[in-house]
Image 1 (cartoon, rainbow, N blue to C red):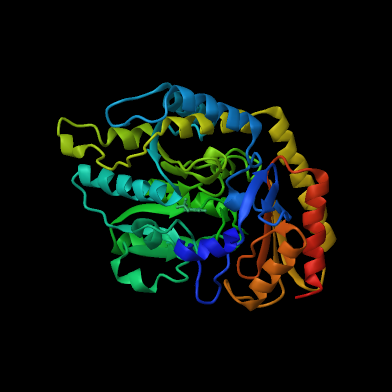
Image 2: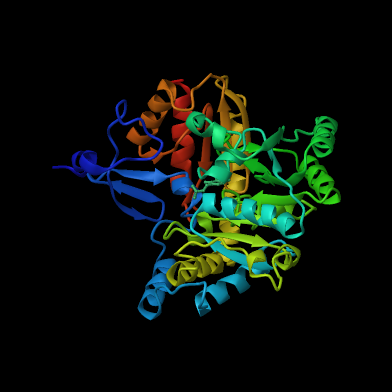
Length: 421
Ligand SMILES: *Cc1c(COP(=O)(O)O)cnc(C)c1O
């Protein structure tokens, strides 16, 4: 029996209505930018498997570093012990994170990085004897699927059953260059009516919303307002982190730095699950006390797994290498050329690109999980490219190690699909 058939017996996949769509493609191998299925078909992974394996799948350098760590120390509880892989990783991260970040807290995935950030912000004020309970977040933001993260997400496509159980969040639109004043008015209204804990945001680009890029100056105005009203700022860099925007972090583009940053996805290069919530010394100091209960009693069993730490450290070594930095530059140049070429096509409404991210909006209405989207997915896969449209947005987020030939193939297939829609 094929893997595809065996899969159906016991497995339940995420983001799927199994009754309508029972099949999942079985992948047996991933190397560099290429995924190979059980029938030997190859696909270019043009979205880096949800922006994780940015240095290519099974990257030799990272695999080697991971393997070496596995033979030395696998896992030890992080509430009582420490180890060199975590220490080395914290030192490497603090070097590249925005300069106000000074403490590294470990989680398991993007959602729990956000969850910890939300709890940190709430407890930071609780420890001061201030009860603050409301958050501010962008419309159409995405922050994950655990309860806190789900509440912060404005993009609640199918959150119906849970809506009564979510944290209190007030929404503002993303800055577009001409709505500064409207946003400031909303912020003023919210701060006068509610006790605001924090503002959580995807800096510069909203990923799940369709790689929507917003105005940097506008974001800076919001962050400045938050700082001056003691509203903690939480940058969710789970998608944007580690070089995808052309800088190490999207927050590097913005003058005002966040108090807390959430990291995951590319952190461990697609090899192992891990996440980090970093923060400033000031946030950390808010938990220091003679009273034990003022500590941060949030923990995951696999916190700072030594193997995952070694993997992440190797990833940062590659990210900061000249080779990868040069790759990010040429990919960006190449996106720019493709954008010029395609932006006036009648089926294309608009294009945008930054770093290794490219996105185009189709001139068609498209459901997030509808017929046209399924047809497009099939069209791409039949031609050997894995792309996963978000609504009417087709986006590329290729591994930094993609070859010119592979990237050209991705562009060609996107151009070809325009004749079909
Ligand atoms: C993917 C993502 C998350 C959630 O991460 P998981 O690892 O899937 O829980 C949170 N925030 C952003 C911006 C993301 O892209």
